[in-house]
Amino acid sequence: MINPDPPLAELAALIKTWGRELGFQQIGIADIALSEHETRLLDWLAAGFHGEMDYMARHGVQRSRPANLVPGTVRVIAARMDYSPPDAADAWSVLNQGELGYVSRYALGRDYHKVLRRRLQRLAARIAAAIGPFGYRVFVDSAPVLEKALAEKAGLGWIGKHSNLLDRRAGSWFFLGEIYVDLPLPVDEPACAHCGRCTACLAICPTQAIVAPYRVDARRCISYHTIELHGPIPLEFRRAIGNRIYGCDDCQLACPWNRFAQPSVEPDFRARHGLDAPNLIALFGWDAAEFLRRTEGSAIRRIGHERWLRNIAVALGNAPHSPEIISALLARLADASELVREHVTWALAEQGATPHH
Picture 1 (cartoon, rainbow, N blue to C red):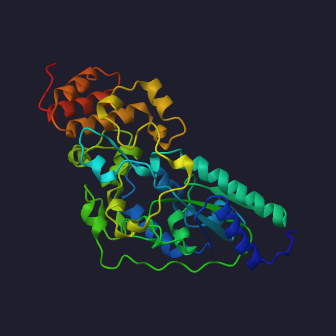
Picture 2: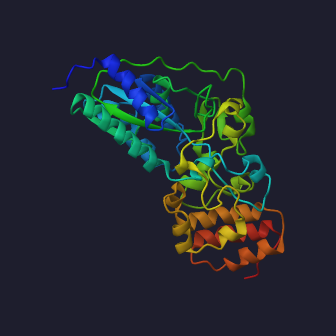
Picture 3: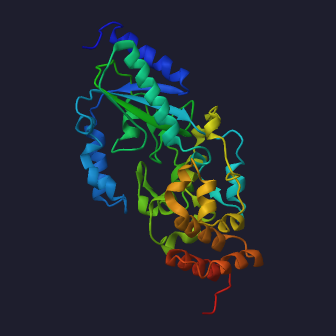
């Protein structure tokens, strides 16, 4: 039996205090009524915008019905942790230097899944210490959870036209995590939208993946092509990818609200291994063992060495012409991977050095 003392409103206030003590910038509480978001999700899936992300369709409405995923859930504690690496090279400067590789800023530090999950588990343990055992489950981008919809309901921000969550004080450079709970805690006011008439994110997208405000076609998105897609990157998007080798931040970089984003105070999110402004030729030289060593504890590791080389080959094809780049590409022309070979061949042609077989 849950100890009714402290009362639930008091407990909700304590949860927010404990969350800040654990390094979260904001905590909010939402109910689990997501029918409006469910309709939008089903429309998005019906349009085929999820591409090859079959898991999105497979879990369907489990995403929008938290109690189906964790029976007994009546509330969701949503948490936000800022990640903008304080010491990273300027993003636009890296994007404008074709011989460098651009890695999405969220992936420069330690894998956020581990960092946030540990903190949320500690938060749940503090709640249990205060009230006794209760039903809960922690999620960090790890299950069919409509995290942005829940965070919006919990007052952490609004879903912007680029489909990321935005906060007036923090922009969008933050991670989200959730605790599904069986406690009927008082809920927070949902956030109001403040995108207004701004369409900066739609205009900046290199592949026009934001097909309408609030609608992203993943099949056009550079993050999808460089992270989620397993096979060849479609030819029509290769030039637009530029030097983005893992993810893409353009829609966030263009967003006026990110003027207010604070650098992360979390040591784990500091840029590691010089990946904030890496030399493409150097990265292309990594063998599988070096890739694993350099990406230990990083979100980048999930794409594997083969797709890492695929992405870098595209960036080298788009880089300013140079004999060094052609040499680096030729050195991989006989790579064991057909996927890598095909992208290297394309890149050599872009560099004006079509190989003779």
